Structures are given as structure tokens and as C-alpha cells.
Image (tube, helix red, strand yellow):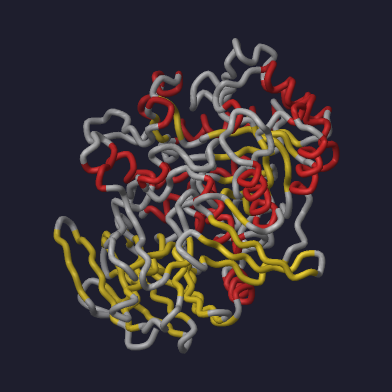
Length: 554
């Protein structure tokens, strides 16, 4: 990080200033460098200042054959190692011509505030990154995402690296830690152990969890009869599982969390949680706590509780569920409503874990003098305050904001019920597109988070023979990857339909893995090779990701 140059852009009143100095009439930047092991910058304003951008730029030559790790913006975003000939893709060009597509997709990812050049060897990564050449890893990691998301960018051809801080919208009147980055070199597991130790992230209290979730068999078409049947049949799994989770579809509308649909769940949700407990499992429930569908009761009755457009009307922030709004948690009444919903779900109904989804929507735009990173950090703090000591499975969240807050977290996109995906899967609409291939990719390349930041959830695997389009090999491959790289293991199958072979494979996949990953990388365009030790034996799993085919024994 030597011979670096800073660039800062800020506003005072309506006037915009740009500078590359460590001090001027408006501010002082206090810089501390730990040799070549990290840097820390504290911005000290002389008056009220609104930050626009901050960047550290320096030369960093790329060694031939070196890989750069791209950590995507949020939990769903495709993340992997990239080489000098690879391209980091942004939104599909079609998004610019399809009505509203670009606006809505911009909200899901980082496309509105991060550059995608579309050129080989130019990449960016959120919160942390690393360069890897064979077994040598050089990691760069942010120690503070509360003052803005940290974005590491590289131009391999130019031999240039930049560390930017997404501070847009942050209004500062006191000293502000604008950047704090550590650099660590060593072997793969060694550098991540040291990085999370430097962040003082406590070891996750959850190390392994296996069970059922309703989403990928029925989606929102669940009712009391379906759930009760699957609860009863899941008893076949016995002590091999921990949890039974109910996903979207139990509520009248998204946002009306404590109004279960009386036609679908006439006995109420407490009765369902009790039935799950009677079978010896924890009860889990899906929520999107920051959101409410446009047709929800809460949205109709309290439009002032949501983020608003300049005209004062609630702003559409999510295109799911026919369009949805995002609660403004700085509105005290909205905050009390969300807290009350959690109190009912966790304490009156008795659920033990909540899967909290679409969390990125809380920080889609800077507001209230806070940048995106500050908003997301405060949103996660609020959720943990609401949930207390019960379990949180995070989903759709910028991962740095979830470190040390959630017990488990999705680290990839949704899988889909057909391995090769739908027509839009291969169009690369955006880096958050649901796909079995993308989910497998992320399970492998975000493996370093498991047991350090939280317990990794790679999403579900399938063993059933109906209502999916997977070959037997594709089902076994997905299950094998989840078992090797994840520790939150879910199926959505009615296990009452399983034959003995399927049930035995479920037991095997649900069991904690003792595998030690030696290496995992793309060895060709769509070909991934994993080398590992399992039961004291050295093994290799090599497969064609696109086709879901392997010559290895699964």
C-alpha cells in the first residue's frame, strides 16, 4: 500500500469540492499505516461536511496466473475468483430497454453506485478480497463497514488497485473513521483466521443445522394440511435433523406478519410451532421484516411508515409480491410495529429461529445523513435487538453488515427447481439471478465465512423425484457440495415420499462433514476441481458446473 494517493469528494451546503490533500481549510485526514500491513484514515471535519466519495489508489502489479477474489455486494451476488482474462458482468443491456427493469434491479445489487467496466481483468469486491497464486494468499479486509461499505477494485492490466469507501450521504461533524484496512499474507485458512480475529468477530454459536423448509416444493402455496403432513412425515428423519422451517405463504400479505391467513392456517401459527416442537425440532419462520407488500393492511393503513418518494408517496423498493415498500425504521411507530411482530412470532407463537430475507432493501439509498453501510449496520443492530437470544438466519444482506450479528446466513442466490434454469438464467440479467450453478459456485468460493462470520447456508438440495428437473447426478452433486461446504442443510421435500436409498442419502448429507478443503478452483471455463481430505483419505471432486456432471463418485 506504499506510494498511495487519496482522492476525496465532499459537499458543504450546495457546493461540491474535490481534493487529494490530507488537509485543507475544511478538513484534516489523520493517516496511520502499519508498514505494509494496513492503513487507517480518520476524517476530521472543521465544519459540517457531507461526504460524497473517498478513494485510496496505488500500484499493485499482478503476477501471471494470479487470481482476484470478487466478493459480491450481498448474500445472493455471484462471488468467485477471477483471472486476467475474466470479465465481471453487471446488468444485462436488456435492463435498459425493459420498462422499470433497471430501476428495480439497481435496488437489488450495487449497479447504481459501482462501476462495471465489462473489460477483462477489471474487478471489484466488497468488504474484503484476496489475491491468490497457488497456495499463497494476500488478503485485504475492511475492519469497519459501519462508516461505509469498502470496495476493493483492481485493474490487472494497468497494475493498479483502488480501495474506495461508499460514504455517499454521510454527514459528519466529528472525527470519522473513513477507512480501516488490514493486509494479511499466508495460506488460505490462515489469512481468514487472522482477518476475523482482527475484526474481533466472536465464534458463531451455531456450528451446524439440518432440517426442512417449505419454499422449494410449494413456494407460497402452503396451508395447514400440507405443513402438518410434512411435519409428521419429517419424523422419519429422527435425530438427524434440528429444525423445521415454514417459509413464505403463511401470512395474509407480506408485512402483515402476525396476521396468518385464516383460510390456510385456521388453527394459527402457535399450533404449528407446537406441533413442530412435539416432534422434537426447533421451529423456524420466514419473514422479510423491512418490507410490506403494496396490498398489505399495514401499507394501506400506515403509508407514512415507509420510505417515500419526493412526492410523499411510499417508494416501491422491491418487485416481489406485486411490488413492496420498505419500512423506515427511524420512524418510531414503524420501529415499534416491527418489534411487536417479532415479539408475537418468537414469544407468543414460540418460534425458535427467524429467517430474515430481503434485508438489503433497508440501505438501498443514503438518507438521514447516513451512508449505506451505516444504515445497514443500524438495521442489523435493530433486528438483533428485536430477536434477542433466538436464532437469526440472514438472507439477502450485504455480508459485512451481518458478520457477528446473525447466527447463520445464506451465502448465495436461490437454487431453482430445474438445474439448467429457466430461459433467463443464462441471460445474466444480474449477478443475483437464482440458479443452481450460481448457488454451487458461491458455496465453494465463500466457504471461508463458515465458522468465522456465521454458519454458512448454501440453500437447499433436492432428493425427491417429482416437481423438479434434475438428473440423479445433478441432485447428488448439489447435495455433495452443500455437505462439503455448508453447515445449514435444508431440503424442501416431503420425506414421506422417500425410498430407503433417498432416506439414507439424506442422513449422510445432514451429518456434519469432517472434510478439510485443500483447494477449490476453476480449472477450465465451467469446470471446478475440489481437492480435500475426508475420513483421513485424500479425495478429488471434479465436475462440469454448467451441466452438473462429474466422473467422480458422489
